[in-house]
Structures are given as structure tokens and as C-alpha cells.
Image (cartoon, rainbow, N blue to C red; front, side, top):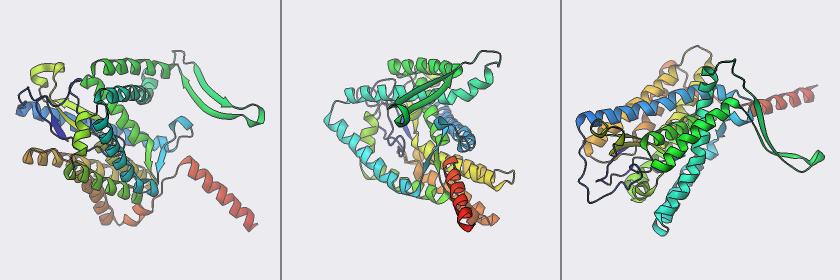
Length: 383
């Protein structure tokens, strides 16, 4: 987490995982401008900015976790979650580190302007799709059933006859097209203006989709992933200037920002506090896993979900406190990982369910089908 204004070069707080780094743009301008005096936020502006960031961070975690329960039972290929295994989790910090250092070299060698132009177009497309997917359930609820809703299918195949193979098979309807249209308007707004509101709309959509669609297969995998990214985050923020350099150069909606001068300048404010999406998605997918564990217990309680959710609030609040105490940007996972893992483990120990927690295995339509096939084959052999 960091303060970013037109007169400071504060490093970004973390960017592990999906975002791997934070951007520090200020309405399309560089975060560093030595000719402008350093902005000093008022206590009210600071409280509003960080309170808003915490609130925005909680939204995709809460709703993404709820949607992940439905997603895990979906048989629609477009809504199928991506399962992270222990091997994936162990390799992730290494891949993220290579990506981060690769971007660092790119920004050192090539023009920052052209790289960010390419990234803007890439995230323009991804942002439209993510925001459309986020809006879809809401649109289905608000649009009356009497409104015609035609079904469409986008199908690409390869070969003919028996050798025909599906390449793309995407089903959508009229409401999905309407969501795409609204998302495209936001996308154009972001590309043209780089406005912080458009940035946050895309950022919230990315975070919610990440929590919803990225599933850890068990708690052990979650501990491996969070532990690895804990080390990754601390090393790249405190051990080198790579994260800071990339963060100051990278322009993309992979962070949530909120202006500390909103009260003085309104929507034209440009001195931001920010939080990287990695600090939302990585703990978020672990919290979502604990919600699905709660559901699997069939006790009609959400003990571990609410425990980890409150732990996330505590960890994020501690990040803000330490940052303002030491006047230095902090890697949020340094505080979030121990809180989000430690609190639920303590609760499980007190309830005598620690073994059940670590034995829990995520069941997906694919693994469920494989288990049924294996069971059928075993029955045939026994007969």
C-alpha cells in the first residue's frame, strides 16, 4: 500500500500474483514530478482515502467468495473455475518474479510510452470481458422477464466430419451483449482519460473475477501459495528497487486508487493512495476456499469464512498503521498472510477441526466425474 502524488515517488506496496506489480499513474501523468511540491494530505482526506480503499478491497472478496461457491458447481465451460494445485502454487512466486524482472528490463531498454500503449490495449480487452462477466448476474436480476432475451452461440471448429474439433464454443444472450456495451463505454473512458473511477471499475472487476474463478484445491495449497508470495513480496519491495521502478512505470488497472485530495478537488483529484490487486486476490482466493470448506461441513455456519474475512480487515488495517508510522510503503502480504492463515488455524484448533480443514479437497465437476469413473471401474473389477 502506498501514497502516490505528483510530487513523490513512493513505492507501491505489493503486486504479487495476477497483477505482479502496481501501476502508479495519476490520471495519465507520471507519479514523479520534481517540479511540483509534495502534496500533504489532510487528516480527513487520508481517512477518506484509506477507508474507501479498505471498503473497495472487501467488496470483491466478499461477493467473489459467494460467487465461487456457485462457480464450483457450474457445468458451463465459460464459468468453470481454474484450479490451482500445490505444484502450481510452488511455482507461482518464481514465475511472478521472472515476470516482474522481465518487465523491469523492458522498461529499462524500451520506451515506456510504447510499452504502456500496448498494455493499455491489452487491459482494455480484458477489462471489458471482466466487467461484463461481473455485471451479468446483476443484469439478469434487474431486467424484467418480459423483455425478450435471445440466445446466441459463437462457434469455431477445425476439420470436417468425424475429425471436426471445437476451437471456440461460447454461448451468450441479449443481456450479455448489453453488459458488453456498457463495459466497452467504460473501456473507452479508461483508455482516453485514464480516470481513476474507470480504473477502479476495471480493478474491482478483475479482483472479483479472480476470487470467483481461481480456486485452490485444498488448504495446504493455499498455505504454499500465500507463503511463497509472502517471501516474494517482502524481497522485491524491501530487498531491491525492481518493484518500485516497475511500479512507477507501469500503467494498467491492476490496482485500486482513491484520491486524498478528493475533498479539495473533487473528481479531478490526482494525489492517490493505492492498493495492488494482488493484495486482494491472493488472500481472497484463500478466504473463498474457507467459505467452500464451511459449506462442505453442512453445519449452516460460516465460521472460517467470517474469521478469515475479519483477519483480512485486521491485516489491512495493520498495514496502513505501519505505513503511516514509518512513513514508508509496505508489502501488505507481510501482514495479510499471517493474519488470514493464522486466525482460521487457531479457530480450527479450538474447535478440533484442524485435521478436517487440511483434509478438505476441492471437488470440481471434472474431479467429481473422474471419481465416479474410478468408482465404476472398481465396481466392475469387484464383480
